Length: 126
Image 1 (tube, rainbow, N blue to C red):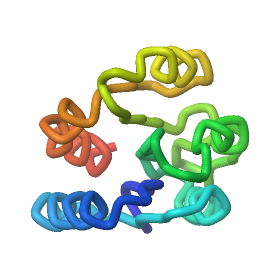
Image 2 (spheres, rainbow, N blue to C red):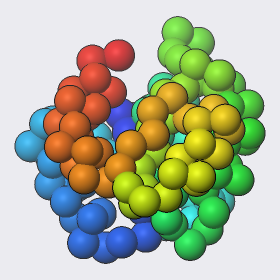
Image 3 (cartoon, rainbow, N blue to C red):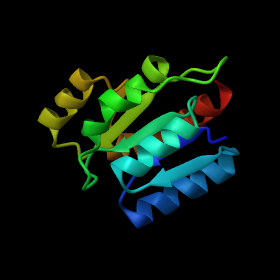
Image 4 (cartoon, rainbow, N blue to C red):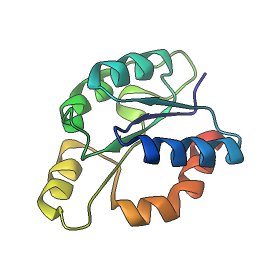
């Protein structure tokens, strides 16, 4: 079962996520479409979700469905699922929309990159 499910189109950034997750001992599933993200989230109900808000598939559209997913007994999911989004630091309006839509954390990509080891450790420990 994956600890983290991520929607990221950028192949270089996918590689960075995968390597950081490997070093942290975290099971990571990456996706490039909303449909694949929802499928993986459904199969991994306790997983933390990472959203690249610059992905081509408009990942904010997945928030209602992600929040509606039900967890397996004894696991968090649905409304309890942690969703962390990242984007360019100049996209302040999109960041506000992401917060309003229900993302637990929204941060610039540079901060996300710095915080990634912490985020992954927290995902593994829950």
